[in-house]
Length: 295
Picture 1 (tube, helix red, strand yellow):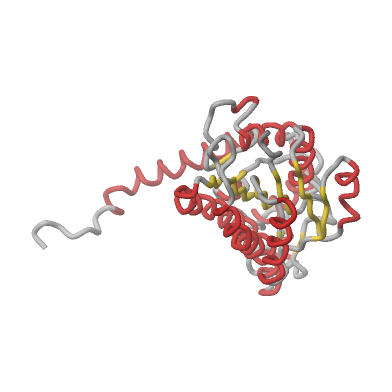
Picture 2 (cartoon, one colour):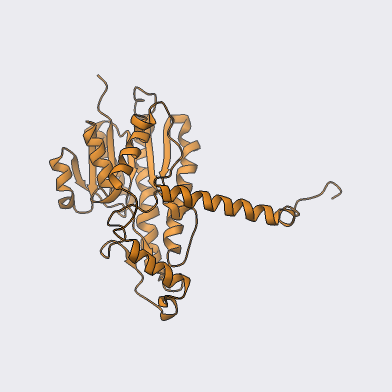
């Protein structure tokens, strides 16, 4: 018998982390669900998950000790899902260095350190019956594609997650380890709730003005909160199908980007079209900088 696939999921207390854990459990897989406070994931423990405290902002040696413990106990990790993250709401002029560091520490450095700690074990574990040794998942966003007023820091960290997955894909391919980034549109999670969204402490009246782009986006975020079009349960069912190459993704390879939601499709295509139009408009000037044969 093939062993049950093992999932390690950070930030499983809510949103995509929690629903991914539930989807994997429903399929009879082994799930290690983590949160800073394990009391917040008792429902996952009741559903059959192994739960533990895990903070992605811990020093790297502490994360490495967690990885050592996980592999000693479970033998392998087939799906390393890095779901930890939060949005920083603040104009660039308003965000302090400490607030920016905190955003990068959780959204970027924590993910990189977790992957750094787990990869030595994943590279050495036997391949699954599909020939895949493991899958590394990061979480980007449609904000990975285009920045905007009041969410510059969020766009920056999510862009990092998308480029990280794109870079890991060729790096890990010799070891039959897959890398992918999830880039959701607006899904109805607690992501934009007051207790989850981090607003800069400094709020300048020049940016609070609802006639400015920053003020308009802030108002729009309030309106869309709890009214997002995406159903996170449906999103995670599709996500787990894609990662496990089953269900709606039977027989297909895991793509480097998993762009969930109709709004994600519209947003990303719009960005691609705008970028192509810009290149077309400026092509003669942009491409005039190479050496010529005469030189």
